[in-house]
Image (tube, rainbow, N blue to C red; front, side, top):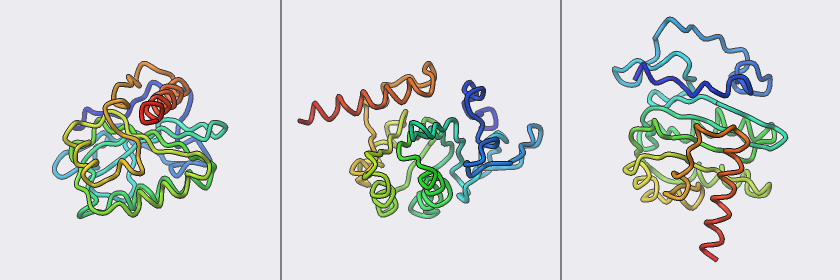
Length: 193
């Protein structure tokens, strides 16, 4: 796991530690010391902590004028034991919502397992942004992770599914990713109507 580093090709567009409005403003990274672990596995020092012992993240991009944040995740998402959604909501999402963000793209291809609990924090997050036509989208979920999230009824508050997983986000600029996500969401709404 120590070889998996956060996506870095957008760094010329955004760096969370340099953004005064970011929850990670001013953070200094040690590129040569691997000290953070998920269970017994070290992870790359560029990943950020939010309070969970098994789920880490990197804010890859924020555009305040478009009200969008792109966040990459790594590890095990465990709401049943660690209440990871509470950490993600309270430490990251709430801070960004206060700064006007109401569109969240969560890249979850490195989330290896999900253990659900209730959906209260997801519902709260959704209610915090829905008046602004906000949304939460999860990209590139592994099939078993998506299945567990759907069994936990997260799809009532979070856009996830095969139609979203088709987006090849690494080939896009951040704003083209936003357009691709919005297009997929619109297509899904039309197919349901």
